[in-house]
Length: 404
Image: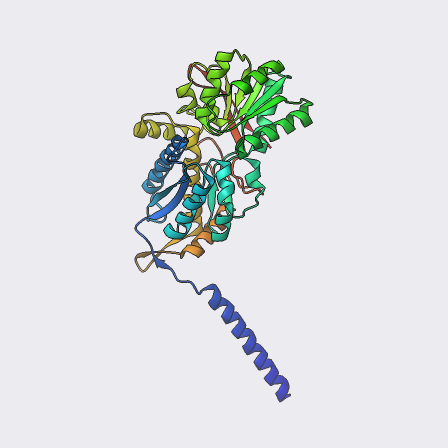
């Protein structure tokens, strides 16, 4: 009897010790004094041929950060951006993200709207376990299944359905060709749209043409498309400057077809600024247009005009909305607390984990511009686009499309 009782006591003590050990392990970290500002990372090309894309990203972020801070920051602690230049290369992107994650020790970051660069940094983000929001729409980025990466632009599978349906059902085209860049975004968009055209409508894309970014001359590709007799082309390219040249050369070569373009074709700041006359009549799908309906559309556009003298653009919209989503996750995660009259913040590792857990619980977030954000199984938050037609160098609203 005594022996049985002794065994019971020892068992209870061991169990208690194990529980205490687990609790001690879980609570081993300590809150730290909060910094004067919390940094949100941002990588994109801020120099080189695609520098304007980085500048538009910066503008979108700055408008968002100003709004977040005006509303009290993160529990009273303001936020600011830490920018790193990718120089438009994969090696540059890896160097930029490494600096943000390991030197700046940011607890959340924006990646790029270039899918190729998001591919390049995925493993670094996974190893550092830092939540990262990206603007690339290529489906291949989703296939990485990186639990720390979140998309805030509608992916190309959804965009493919939107574009294919519009060309066939709305514009009534049956002879369709394609012109696309050799980057992940361009290739992915071409593949997805071609798949929908074939499987849903029985339409084979006529002699599709691929080009390298910043080629400057697209004569061979455009003449090849002209010979097909196509009445419509869809064009997928990340670089608005390339698209402006393509539109100019189409007019010069007499390639008289309807054009349905990716978001870069609707860029007010670049494509339509560089090729306003040549862009007349083209269609584009966009994440944002100043003429769309939405609670914060007018605010965002007016702030862009006030600060930068130009209307807001899609390349500004995704970083703007992304910052607001990150701030929402930070608040929900409780990364900053008040303790004995002082502000405290979680250590980097715990803050990153808490923000990620809050990100996967984002539902019906409507504080962005033209979209309601709702997380899905691919960690995509966006599922809709705006269709516009270019008229007199500006957007003419066609319709708002959600595709599932």
